[in-house]
Length: 216
Image (cartoon, rainbow, N blue to C red):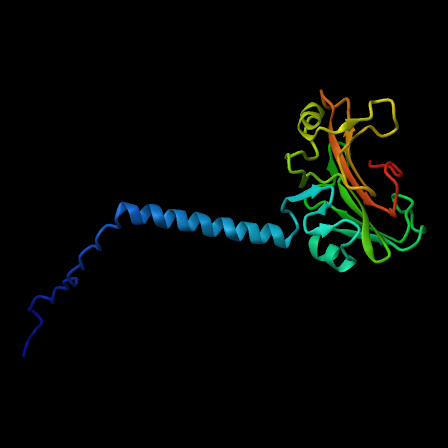
């Protein structure tokens, strides 16, 4: 049969399926909220993994660490960052100490308001006896942290002010017997007002004394 003059068959696309029904508005809102919560949880996990989350500091301890009671293993599980440690005074440690000294650098920043951004842990008799930090991730129950204006910190912490005529000015905060809890205060030409520059927390016997080294 001769088909040379017959028209070529035409292609007809299959019938398009109907559009799915529009999602109700309340489900859209719920989906958005769930996605936001999920992203928030993932962000918190990531920050926790890399040690960037905030942590409270009080007269009894730092985060989950109880001053004078927490072990080195608990400390290592809690903090993150570049680590330097000293078991003797050799190697130019930043402070003169007893026992062991561990230094954690801040993640993502080298300095904090003109000083080295770091946290020191002094360990004596197997426990964290002394803690000092310039890391802004630590804050008190009143939300005082490194960088808080001094006038605000003094008002909300109700601490005893040493005045400026000492080597390392600070607020003395209430603490149980045998524990020292200080808020370091500094002022710098680059900043128009004085501000909180660090925290010092130590149990007896301490590993290193307050103001025994250079924070910068």
